[in-house]
Image (cartoon, rainbow, N blue to C red; front, side, top):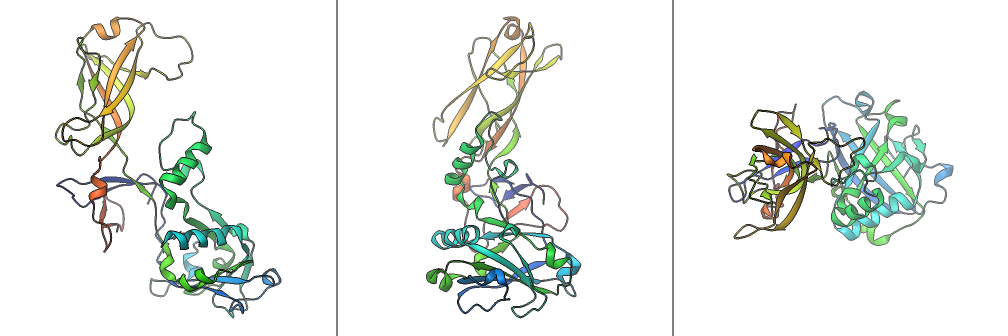
Length: 346
């Protein structure tokens, strides 16, 4: 499932909410069969690298398709999501990335062909530019973007990738255990960890999606024009940011309009016009905000003739996502375009 796959929710107040996936997902026929965190004595493959380990997390995976083994599937990397109470999953995340001294991949705790690797086989998720949730301008500071998302979407960092290639490219059966050896123990966490802490096939989703907005007939007696994503659903759509603006004149000529604060290298067009936006609270019964579009020009001829402006915006569903049912298999999300072997996402 690629990044930016669009999903529609079940209806709420008669409207569906649209989400986009933010991480790519590979759906393997693999399930988490068991998980446990234990202190000494460690029931795990032994190696010189593990001599100083004080605890060990065992994550057992099982192929769900009949007559399938890890050697036939060969999932060289597997992405795992940590779920559960925040005080547990953040402590486990810290153990994985601050206290791992070695990793073993084996068919069982007594597997004589266990493959040992370094903590480098474990990779954090959510820090690369391709894994950002919120749209940001290219000139924005990446560190500020990461910090913002840490407070707004902290769960997006609760993923990790594990490199399985050293084992699955050799001999591996239908069940595989990954052993994480830690130089620290946490008695409270040892009592809490179960297989329910780990989930496969997950991705963050965000209620932001591109939308072609209603055309705007520019009136010369108005300084600004409200951007309306859909005149039939004003209570369900709100503008997050403007993506494109284009103007069409009476003769059918079409031209792209640039943002007022955009970088414009080279000579300016004699007929160039620019757009700017202003955001104000919605009036009446609508929640959220409204965005208004205005124009400025180097040459008055830009707005002196009749023209229709077309816009594309990044939109959200106002406060409707907060009204969706959560828990018990809900909300149910359905891809808006056909995707092989995907019916719905829970």
